[in-house]
Image 1: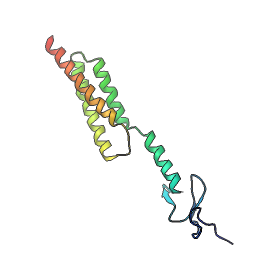
Image 2 (image 1 turned 90 degrees about the horizontal axis):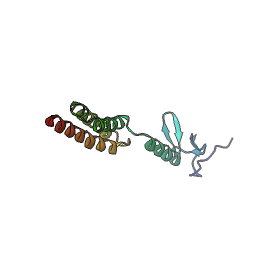
Image 3 (image 1 turned 60 degrees about the horizontal axis):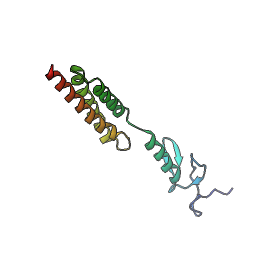
Length: 129
């Protein structure tokens, strides 16, 4: 019985079929990811799909909290929600520093700016009353 050859290397026997495209791959061409084997092209596509679809939820929550703080930034509401949004943004930034493949860095920046603005509005409004 003849063994199948790698789709890229005619002189090498296949080790596994790619889980993405079902091409035969030799040990040099295959990469195991969570129990499945992938060729280089499918692995790169899988990584691109994962990277494009993952926005850190903490970063999204931080920018939403900051936007709410700006909208309702009168007196103590802005003084409470603004710093809270900044602290959530800081937590999200720490996660993003360790997990560089996740997206959401602009969410963090926006939360810092909006949270600081809401805090300032709250402080000025409170001092004027």
